[in-house]
Image (cartoon, rainbow, N blue to C red; front, top):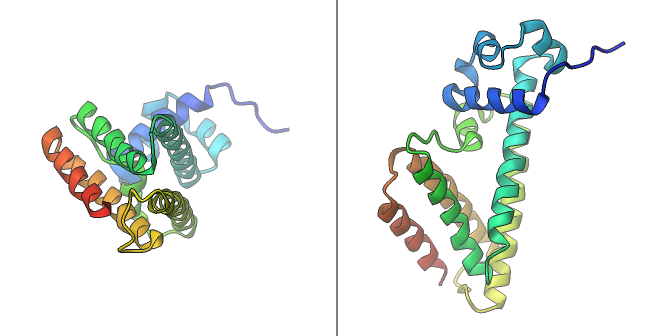
Length: 193
């Protein structure tokens, strides 16, 4: 009979996500996880099997929370171009709020682990595909509304925006000056008009 978890799984995922966000996957030890959660190793292994599975669960939860937060913010957009600008505004808000920002856990994961682990790479490709589809749909809608130019296809602009978002998140680790971040955002948006 499987053992019953006697801890708050969501809280543990949040605590461990913070550790992975601070240290990265490779530098995080099982002792770091034990220290952060107060759980013993056997509880961690019984519930998650290993550090790798725990990391994947943290990534999935982080993605879900980020997507939900972004969806809430984008629901206020008046049009697709406004929605694209709001994506950057959400990240500016996060960067300013977290002066010692560690960047996006998923972007950090891509730079640390992409192509080193099949299941992590699969997760990253799926995340990228989802975001590219979302951006392509936004751009296509904006082009139909004549808010976004047709100098490039919606797919090309989606790739441009995806790359810009990734770079923006990395830049935010070192630059937390709101006017500078706004200037970067405005330059990106100007390309679409």
